[in-house]
Image (tube, rainbow, N blue to C red; front, side, top):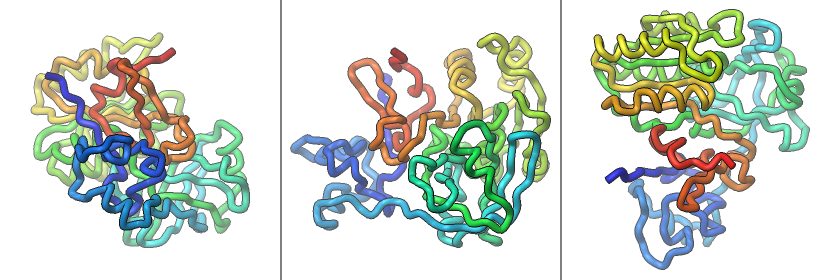
Length: 328
């Protein structure tokens, strides 16, 4: 029986229960999603319903907005910027985990300028976070107006930037394969760090995409990664070279996980091609983030059987991310 284990990234945290519980839309708690009995689908050791009652039948206080200072701004190439931002020690600690991201915007503008950006590095010694931003639209153009020494507004922490986080945590002392493309370089670094700390040998397949260079070279060297450069996708299909490279790595190494830091079409193609391999997957969560709380509906995806997943909060195995998904 193919039973899908669904989790909520916020369950049991200081932000639970959230506003979904107030509307009987909780991802985990049966009593907080309109049912009359206790049957949590993935209990986290904390009773969400009891927490809700103890909090006066209302949601916990949500994420806060912090005013932080830009310490360094580096132009990596045209329209690609790296920011180093000084944050509080607590926020820096909360952003150490794979999948961490924040909403950035310039101060004193409306919330609809909030831009979700994945954390590349959280330095808890210096209380610095580093992010790479590709300047593409109105929101990122606004952020690019900021200079070193300016304040920047940060809302967070958010943690659901990676699907399959549990698979990363249980992958130990073998070989881990990281496949990254373009801007996916940045959010792949915390994953590599975690897998490296778990005693894994790291192999990276890197496609620069439309970028001029690989801007995470120092991290790949720091975590002793074996790096293979390869074009991954051509005309919407996996290239023969990347299929051969992945197949050779799987055959000659005891691989425990494949992490894919790329766009959805690449994630789907790789998982679909190697779905019969007895191996775990994790991947970037490319849901459209807007509020980060499951309220606005931008992140929702619909599946057969009238199932709806709020991907800004829902954690699932990447194999289930596209199976049965309705695209129209």
